[in-house]
Image (cartoon, rainbow, N blue to C red; front, side, top):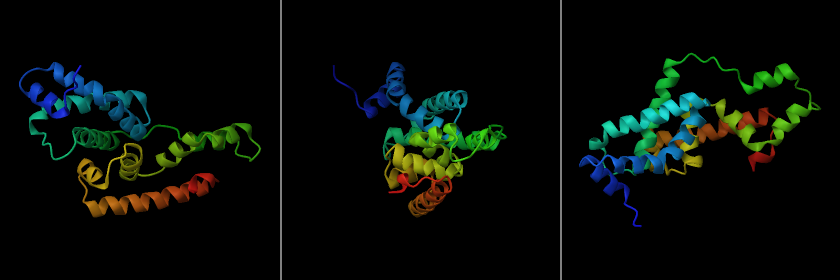
Amino acid sequence: MCMKSDAELIKKTLEGEWRNYAVLVRKYESKIYSYVYFMVKNREDAEEITQDTFTKAYRALHSYRAEAKFSTWLLRIAHFECLTLFRRKVPTRVSIENLLQTEGNSENDPSRNLYLADRNSVLATALSKLKPDERSVITMFYYNELSIQETTKATNLSESNVKILLHRSRKKLLKILKGMGIKEMMA
């Protein structure tokens, strides 16, 4: 079975063959959901934003230009949907750090040691302390493996702004990790 390229699927969708768009959704929904969940840290919000991203992309598909990869274009829509949520929502979530402080924060506390042993949790916690734009560029560049140019297109920032934001975000992340007592992730 021959796989159609994104360009072919988009062309067929624009010609009215909507099932081709379903193929694009299946192809990219995991990547978009992962990015959105990483940004919003809430399953329901991530599902809603992912769905909104694909709905908006479908409605704007005629305006897609192949200058950027389709996945980058989708990430850009998802990025702005996340920012919209952040502006709209008053934060009501309890941070993991606050839970740890209330449950005990001594060095011998088994729950804290178990928490610190889980590198992904530690990194996710550290990333959650970054501002949304900082977390976004770090996520796009390192987790989604977008180039500087693709990150620029996805965030609508200049290339120099993306580089500066990445640099500052890495330094801030390093400081946060040091503050959490983590040294092995810093190599």
